[in-house]
Length: 125
Image (cartoon, rainbow, N blue to C red; front, side, top):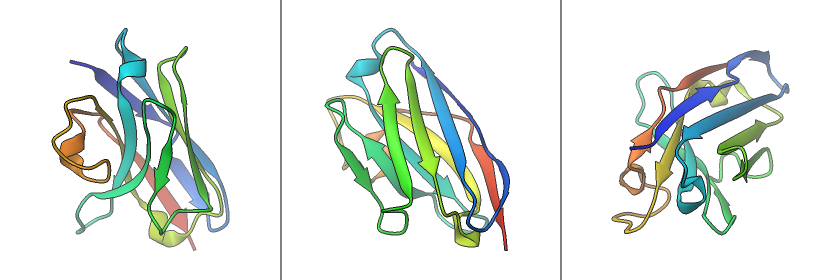
């Protein structure tokens, strides 16, 4: 079972930037699709972005054009560059890893079989 550890969260003002990182403890990182989800207080966990094994990317409409997901298979890492942050981006951000056979779509939690512990992102107005 792959273990995921996120880092890079913090407090930032509206319009600021943060870069989240997620390191995976596995020798088969390239075989996993990776995703970022977030959960705000009192809300369900929601899809943010994903990157496939073939490096294809997908984003939620709420972050498209502001966030960029990328992966580095040499370092077993997936990053989420977040620019022009807004107060609505405040949440705990989670990294997920999933590999075939998939039982859901990339934007659904069940697509991912492993999750990190989360990192808090707070955007002040």
